Image (cartoon, rainbow, N blue to C red; front, top):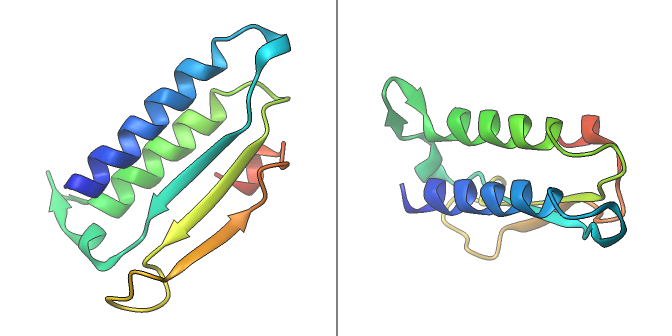
Length: 99
């Protein structure tokens, strides 16, 4: 649950930063928790599904010129806190690569 709240907070910050003027758009780096705890359920959906839906919705609401990067952790090695992977470079401006 703690990880889900972190992801949601990051997504809210990302949405707010998109409201800035076009000349001040900063790149956004999303951090996705894909660890085993995300298989836990809330209201019949896994935390992983909920986080993916929130990420997809947020990214689709960003402007087309927004640079978007993605880091995932906990998705390759069970219980390894060093399992962090840079999935999409921060210079990316293609929403479809993230969603």
